[in-house]
Length: 245
Length: 245
DNA sequence: TCTGACCCTGTAGGTTCTTACAATATCTTT
DNA sequence: AAAGATATTGTAAGAACCTACAGGGTCAGA
Image (cartoon, rainbow over the protein chains, first blue to last red):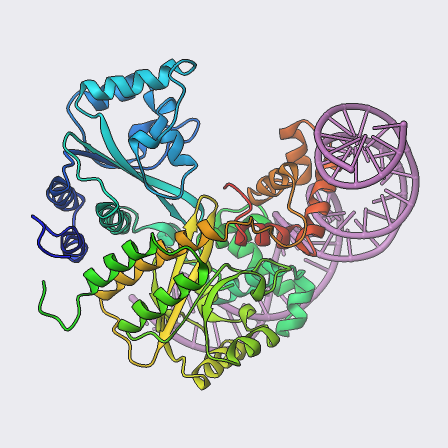
């Protein structure tokens, strides 16, 4: 354990502790820059994976990339052929760039992406997929010229990345259900019974009120959630985690 | 950094390193027992969350629980009312048991679960949800009487748990078939549109099939999910992370 | 070849939902 | 005291859902 030029374990935990005191994305960016450089990484990006109609720049949370590379990446739409991205979509575990497979013969675009990255000094790297409640959430990809990438350092980078991402998300999406008026306790109750498969009449019997009243609450919830019907209202309430079920 | 009675950081990284050499579930169990006890935890369980027709014992990967408690937990079907489990389904971050909310007045079954756990000496604990490609994958819950649960130790427990789970899964890989028959792609598609507030007729127009066919898929999904209507089917599908929305 | 799984469609009738029109009562806040 | 949010209930008509019945087509695997 000790005796190395620097302790990856202590570095990682110190970073995680430091995160608690960082209150802005740029502060997190700076802290990541410092800590990751100790592992040999000069560049990194924290981003979601763009959907079919999304652009990369719409899902980037933080990045420290060489000037020019990001522009090229966007203009060439490299994200559609990036082997790192591809593997990221299907991977739970972190992986080194070298472990992201592609066919050099049959997939020239993949090779192109990796070659152009090399032009910017990004030849080797490490990528961590981040998964949440609904599956894939984001990835953190980092690269450098003189990497300290071993079985010992990977867990440290893993830990740092997971906590950094959580911190970034906590700061960048504080809204969530704050949009629109909040549901009342009664409205949530009706939706919960609806989610359990109960009809308005059922719920009324259960709660000792009339079917009409149940319907009124459901309608009210539909308006607040901008849902066109009960099913969508329940789906929205579940997605926004408004129901304790 | 050093100077404490034991270094949580070094303990965690040493554990992760040790994992690589463990080739059996029981060896992992032993290693977890040793390392977690250093943090004050006597009991722990590594398990998936049971689906609609699944029993807890079908999804347990590893456990060190007091004799009798597991039997009681199964026979009473406590998993359906366990506040820890409920929060686990909606949480990305690790949390202390005390942070899992329930209404002591209106949810007597939740209180019952927690009280019976206390009878077995499991009053306080820590729970880590594990997420993968498709969202929720498993949880690791641990408890003890004299916990070392601080902002410093949580990341250590987090790291240990994530790597332990990955190691366990790698060894126990046999694909866990979700209880009952899986939904077909078409069924999931119908539920996704229903969750978006579309009627059967709407969905039919969107997909270029008849309303009747949409209904047929919905009905089929209802049967597989043991739902009494479309709303409950959508709710179940969302809770079990079957829809990519 | 046959079986099973999946996808597709039709009719018909009872049930449930959704909306539009109103209305009363309680409670908190201004 | 007045205003506003919340909870409650009523009627009624049209839309949507659910069920039960019955069937045809495709495709993969035994």
